Length: 230
View 1: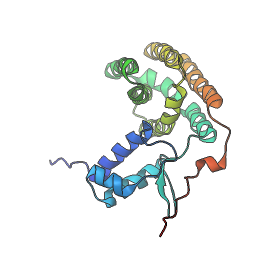
View 2: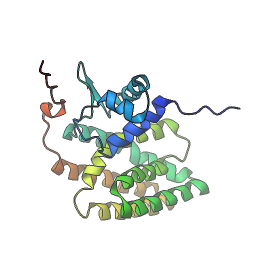
View 3: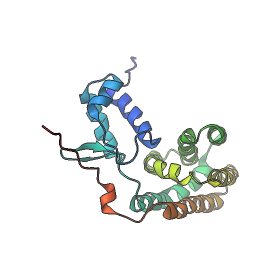
View 4: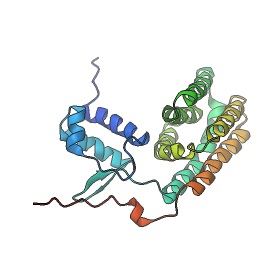
C-alpha cells in the first residue's frame, strides 16, 4: 500500500486558509496570486485550485477582473452562521455525550486542556483549539455528516470568534463556559449540554451584534483596482 503525499493545491489551501482565519490576510485584502505563488514556491495553477476551494468554503470572494479577496466581517453573515450553529450543534453535542466511549471522553478532556493552554500563550492558536474542542463534543456517535456540517460552520465562524475575543474579559468568560459544558457532557447530561451550548453560542452572537457595524453592501466589495498610468 502506497501513501499518496498531499498535492501542492492541498498544501496551498491549508496555508492560505490559516492566514485568512488568523487575519494575517485582513478582510477586503486582494490576493496577489503571482506574489503568493512565488512565496509558496508553486505555480499559479495549484494556487488557483486552492483559492477556488476557499471560495467554495466562503472564506474568499471573487470578482471578474479583480481576482480573489477576503470578504469583510458582516453582521449579516454572523447572524446566519451562528443561527445555523444553534440549530445543529447543541443537539448534536447532546446526542454525542450519550454515545461517547472512554477514548472519546478522554479526547474531549485533552481538547479542553489544549485550548486552555493555548489561551494563555496565543489567542490566534486558541481559536483553532476552540474549534477542535467543540468538534470533540459532537464527533462521538459516528454522525459524519453532522460533524462535517458543524466543522464547516466553525470554519466560517472562526474569524468572528477572534473578533469576539478582542475585548478584555471575554476569554475568561468563554473558558468558564467551556468548563461547565465539558462537565455536563462528561456527566452525560444531554439536556444540560444542549442548554449550556445554546447559551454559549447566543452570548457570543449577542456580543458580536455590539461589535459589528450594521450591514453595508459597499463594505463587502473589494477596493477598485487602480489604473496604471501609461
